[in-house]
Length: 165
Image 1 (cartoon, helix red, strand yellow):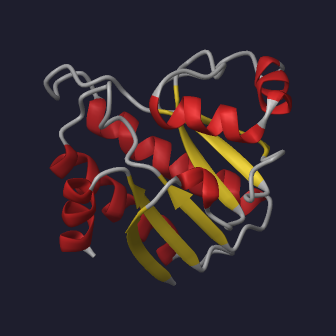
Image 2: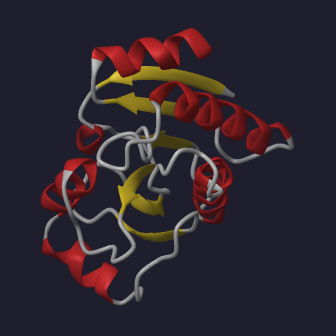
């Protein structure tokens, strides 16, 4: 299993699955969510409308449509409220559910954004620790996934992930 961190546009990555930091509607938004919807094309929005939204800490799967990735896992991360409202567990569950959905389509490679660290304000250091430890634990039991990429928006976020890897 290979884990790495890069600074890139997640919509350009040639992996089996990219993870979208989605909102509960799954109908697009700002940040990485909006970028993925724009890059995938109208078909993604139509597919997401059929899913009926998604609860915080959960995830749902669609095709990748016009993206290089074959699939998109839409994971709804928690909004940070200080850490006493189950944010850490909900964030970890996003990563576990994304891995399970990627395995369900026998994916070999997956790319994650830094879920909840943008407008949802989850502190990057805590979020990255949860992301890396949860992904490692999820893959230890054996998995179709052989390559995990943490795709960072900023150089500062990249440095946090690189320190953990």
